[in-house]
Image 1 (cartoon, rainbow, N blue to C red):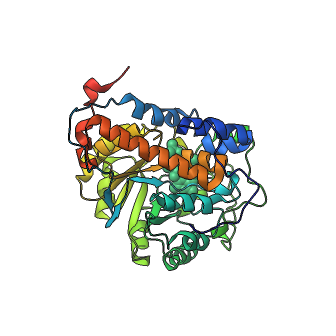
Image 2: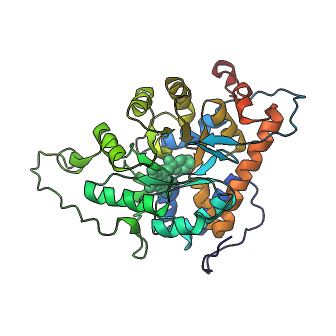
Length: 380
Ligand SMILES: Cc1cc2nc3c(=O)[nH]c(=O)nc-3n(C[C@H](O)[C@H](O)[C@H](O)COP(=O)(O)O)c2cc1C
C-alpha cells in the first residue's frame, strides 16, 4: 500500500462497529450538525431518501438449500474488466469534510478492497493526486471520473482532458442535477464549506455573473438553466473523449433507451441518493423497468440506500451489473479514514457472500432466482 501523510483525525477502528448502521451512528457523533445535514440529508421532506433504504428492505429474498456452493465467487465484468465483486464507491463531493485525508483515503481503501471508485468533479483533492496514489495497485477496481458539465464548455473540455491524462478509465456524466434541489436540512443548519475545503478541480473556472433579471423573470429558467446540459451535450462530450461515458441519474426507461442510442457505455439508475427531486421512486422500484428497457445491451448500475449485502444481492437479482455506495463510505471515512472506508466495503462484500451462500447462489448469475416476485415479496 502507498502511504498518505498521517493526521490527527481518527484512523483506527472504534470497537463495536459491525454493520453499516453502526458506522452511521458513530459518525454522527463525530460530525457537526451542519456537516451531518450535508452528508446525510436529502431534498425537501426526504421521502425519497427514506424510501431508498426502505425499498431494498421491503423486497424479500428466497432461498434454495443444498446447492453446490464450492468455488463460488462474486466476480462480475464491467466495461471490459473483471472485478472481484460488484461494489463501487459513488462520487461524493468534499470528502475532506469527513476526514483530512478525504478522497485519498477513500481511493486507497477502495483500491485495496478491489472496489471501483468514482471521483466527483467537486472533489476536495486534485484528481491527479488520487489517480497517482492508486493506479499502480494491482488489485484495484476501476477508477472513473464523475463530470458535471460546466457552463463554460471550454473549461469542461480541459477537465475531461485532465482526467484522461491522469488515467481515469471512464467518465460518469451526472444528468439528474441541473439544479441542486430543495435542501431544507442543510439550510436549517446553515451548512457552508469551511475556507480550507473547496472544489479544487474547478479552480480557474470563471465565476458566473448572474444575469440582471426583471422581477417577473425566473432566476432558474431565465438565468441558471440557460447552460444546463441536454442530450446534444452528451453527443458533444462523446466527440471530446475516447473514454466510455456512463450516464448517472437515470430514472426513466425511455431515458435509458435514449442513453443507449446516444452511445453511452452504461447507465446508473439513481435518484442522487434522494438529494435532488423529492418523491422520485426508490431506486429498487425503478430498476426492474429500466433493466427490461435496456435488455442487457449495456451495463446497468444502481445506487441509493444500499446498506446490506442482501440489498446488493437484490440489486443484482433485479438486473444491476454492479452497485455504488454513497453515504456509508463517508461514515467509514469519518470514523477511521482509509481504515474505516475499507471496513465498510469489507462488511458489505462479506455480507454479500453470506447472502449468496444462504440463498444458494454460487455466482452472481444465480442471483435472479434469489428474489421473491413482488406480488408475494412484501415482508410487511
Ligand atoms: C455528501 C454527498 C455528496 C454527493 N456528491 C455528488 C457529486 O458530486 N456528484 C454526483 O454525481 N453525485 C453525488 N452524490 C450522490 C451519490 O453519488 C449517490 O448517488 C448517492 O449518495 C447514493 O445514495 P446513498 O448515499 O444512499 O448510497 C453525493 C451524495 C452525497 C451523500
